Length: 592
Image (cartoon, rainbow, N blue to C red; front, side):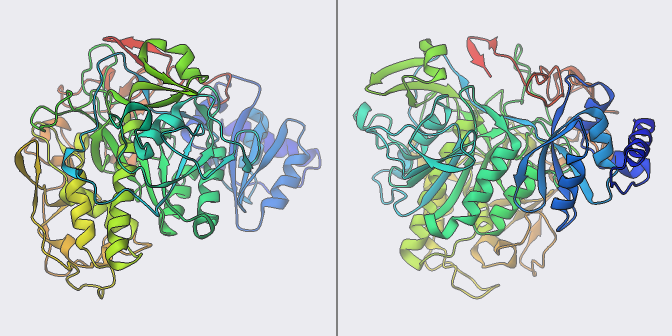
């Protein structure tokens, strides 16, 4: 690789290309993991790449790329991010340009749901009834495969980033996944006689289409959609972004373009809810695996959601973290994720009758009504949709009493504080615990964001428990802040940690009210999960060859062949080379 970089740079200069070359070691360091792997073993003629330039240098870099025979500029995202198709030679040449800060895979993102051929189940919303809130006045942007409206839900507008460069188009969803996720958020239950009514049927839905008819798309299209939501936040009234999609983590969060787009959205005041990923266990044995969080679920400020198996009951004592739900920590950074887990298995919602999902998995269909079917799906995609609906209720409840002002960090803190810890699962599996929708809405309705920083901001008293299935369940009353656990009543204060532009996990001035718990890495009295100081060196969590992971001095409790990607056979990121994960049968489920 280093030799190729040197040769490409000198060759470009000899040919008259106006490139300014750096040392080879610096150039190699600019590539993410997938691009470095691809450069050594190209699996196609070119690779689609995101090129981050130094501020204001995009035009210069594009001009230089235009002089290369084997480089094609596809477009740009924002000001300083270029999308280009590069040969291996052009990749190394671009990496040698002093005005290029970083090269990242324009990786294929994929929806994170699966077709589950099992019994029906209602969302566990019993504690929310009778309804006080519906999400009215809250805008939700679903970045997915589109949304096809029907009698159950309306769509305010659709913007297509797959083929129309973000233009406004008529409603569509050729794959079906976006409609299903949106139904969990916003269905009014009309076609099922209210049997499958959603969490927040009053929200205003926006479809930002970034996935194609097969449920896959480019990272650059997702970034474009996120940036669109930020730019049009005030004009369209967008309060929440739902990202039920992801790709493998190829680089630290600080340089991942998709993560940075999410961080920017949260900094603008938008709550971003993201799927944790469906790589939490062996597809055949369902044995648990750690380290399977996908991007952008590794974004510190996102609310990253894992999935719960409710076993078709209202009481929580038989709930389990779904076998497929990705566990932390995140690659490279060792971030604690997920933040919370929520119902995600065997959930019923809408899919278009003409969609790829409806055509390919007819056994999962339940009822047809005009242009839509009802279908059972499982995945952290579904769990993210459930949490998005609850966040909408929280924002409505808070604004109804106090006006707008509840920040994304405050929303996350409330969700974590009111969650129900699940017995038998460590923080890497469940985050702060299982979603407590009623408790989160009740606490959000009591918080007055207008109180001064550091002041007590509860306008009314709250009970730190919620009745579910006839049982009073205690809230966990903890917030997982970075790699530490905050106990006590910190959520009852307008702490600086809940402010905008405070990155979740960064050290802040907590005052003297905080009781720090144990590190999340060693919590629950079970350090054997991680062995002896496992793989924290150099911030890289082990090494992968694409089919298994070498973790170093890991406890025998977690074996390498059950960790992380398993069925990702190829880390190439050109569409013809990528093998994300083929459909496999796992104990009756078709798992994507």
